[in-house]
Amino acid sequence: MEICDLLTNECILSTVRATSKKRALQELASHASKISGQNDRAIFDVLLERERLGSTGIGRGVAIPHGKLPELDRLYGIFAKLEQPIDFEAVDDQTVDMVFLLLAPENAGADHLKALARISRMFRDPDMCKKLRAAKDDSGLCELLLGHSTVGAA
Image (cartoon, rainbow, N blue to C red; front, side):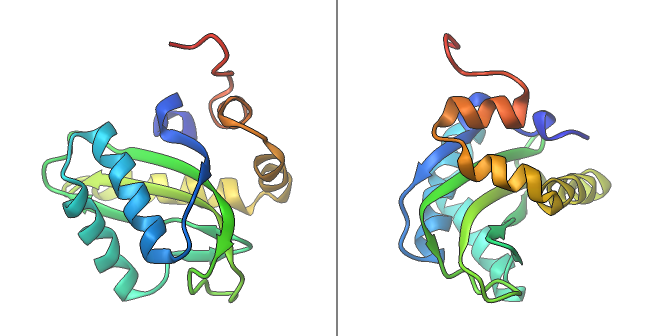
């Protein structure tokens, strides 16, 4: 599974405003709702429930909030750069400025784990993280994450 299997142009956000972890999860749940057709409150509740088990802030300024919903038909991903780093209670106590949200159907099992592993591998690459942070807009992020630009894309 590749990152481009999880994202579309509409799933890449270069400037998300959030002042807290809760607000970031609300913003991402709202966007995920538009893309997946699921209720934004249901998405937010699943994400919050997962965060209660332990922070999805994996360190080095990255968080991978994730959850499963029964009505989903496939895996959905959303990548967001935050305008300002926020406290995500990450394992290394550093603030988070990049978030990759992953939603999966309840029966996704192995696919969900494979996707989480692939996302984690991407963020373990310091060069990729540096490039993602340096990207100035959605187009630059799309080029890095999907291999193409959004310029001229419908």
